[in-house]
Length: 240
Image (tube, rainbow, N blue to C red; front, side, top):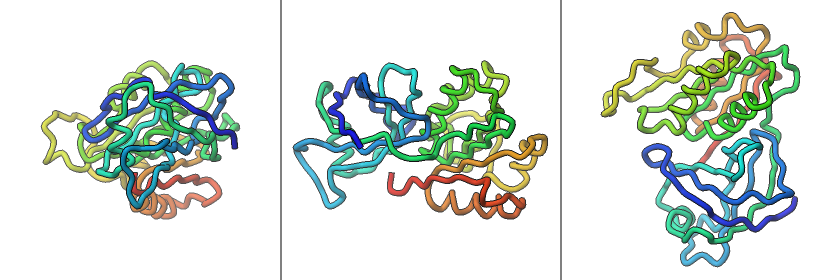
């Protein structure tokens, strides 16, 4: 897999405790939405037992000018360095890798289920589908504790208004601790919530991304719905 030296161009907070990092995109770098890359810090000022390499889904769409990765900001040496290093700092990127990509049969809808930072590969896929005018029906479920924790929430709401083939269902599980108003769904994503939205879809393929415990819980829900394992793709985001 080719390695690239990429420079940090910008960083911004996209939710409480979640930061997006933008890097220049090499001219020869091509990827599919849903793929990921390994980022390696070069001679960082500090390190710890977790090392200087992290794997991130590519959150930007292929047509966007810069590569963007978003992550929860745990207190590790890697993320402290990433958060504080000067703009223009070079890091090594290895990729793209992975096959967590949208199926090609447009007659089958895609049901995307994201928990927390698991939204990153789906942001890329949804933007790309809109740009390329894919015929796929896309339905995204997005679960967070609070609106404050939901990266790209307003962007996804806007995309759903602009793309008739994209439906967006967000739910919050911890509104008691939120300082924002929320008119959408609340509570965990369960069998009934799924059924209410997918009942009109014909033979969808399911994509699940998020923390391991969330992915496992959704797998049980889908099994209870009689969904074949052949129609389920999943990606676990462990440790962030």
